[in-house]
Image (cartoon, rainbow, N blue to C red; front, side):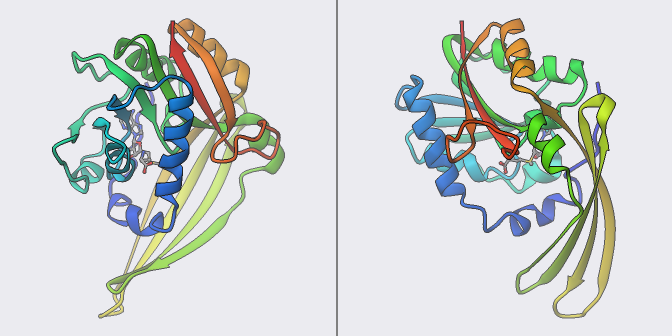
Length: 251
Ligand SMILES: C[S@@+](CC[C@H](N)C(=O)[O-])C[C@H]1O[C@@H](n2cnc3c(N)ncnc32)[C@H](O)[C@@H]1O
């Protein structure tokens, strides 16, 4: 299986970098989608790659109980627990919790962080083992037609708070043979008080998928694809749709 040393030093910057994402709107859309496809109220959810827990608490706000599984100890250390939200350190490819959930989730490209066939089989098998018949598996992926058409581009992003400012440069390299993109990030952090600077690099290997590939993995692991559409808009996936959401049901 591919090992990635990601989200270590990046973890402390994660909520600053993505702080202006509309997590409330994202979870509202996910809740609507899952309810349409049979999610019961007060459901049990297993969130794979739960990061700093930003979605887990919002999902709990809908009355659900959430267990997050996260491999990065640095991300996990920033995730706070509550009566209805718990986190465990584990790998989405191999975690075994001895519990059946109403729904398994992998949010914000977690499935695309699984790169080799063994990695992908691993996360689908984890979802399959933790759902009973009729249980759901919801996730978003990078969509191959859009990656090929729009092309991964170098980007710069700056964010700051009253303590630090962060400049993140992304330099992506396509690996056509592997259907993946290596996103080379370089970070420059400036202390707002002292002006001191620190730099580090992190590479993230991202798999993109076609719809038939997802259908193959779904079928192999005992799921049926109930829904595929652009995350947050429900538009039919096209060559302009980078992020596609899938909702699967366990047979
Ligand atoms: C882009 S972040 C998304 C975090 C969170 N789901 C969110 O929406 O903010 C990807 C997360 O998946 C975690 N991750 C990737 N592969 C994993 C694996 N095999 N097992 C557990 N966590 C994994 C990373 O450590 C990281 O926290």
